[in-house]
Length: 186
Image 1 (cartoon, rainbow, N blue to C red):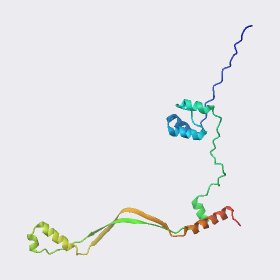
Image 2: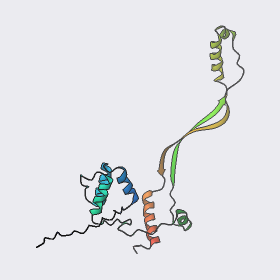
Image 3: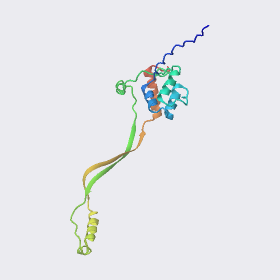
Image 4: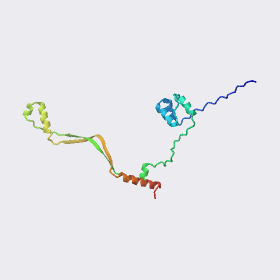
């Protein structure tokens, strides 16, 4: 009897792996051995990468062997409808006024000058120019200054505080939100 060799049909090549997003693919291409990349893949696919997967191609081939993972971009809960713009809320009267205060300091440079004629005794002149300078400066200190323009310098915020009772306002806001959304306890 003739022996027949079983004929094996060639296996079709696995389709290329479909990445959940381009950013993840780029990350794996750029840094396949990074501990951060590997940790992210472990979290995303709920299993560690085999030690032998050190290149992008090896990682992609390994991912193609995994059962499909459903990536959801929507949260498991139903989100609230998008909030209207804040200006629209204010126009509709959906707001609470909060009294607050911000305080700080500002450096102001105020130009001033003191000038006038100073009678310098000759005995001071005898002691030299430095003595005259000191004498005139001391005399001018007693003169009234003439102020020039104010020039503003550094601006620093030193603190912030609410002047309203925030606990009361938070409770009021909760009530208003429940009333607006129709979730009243009553």
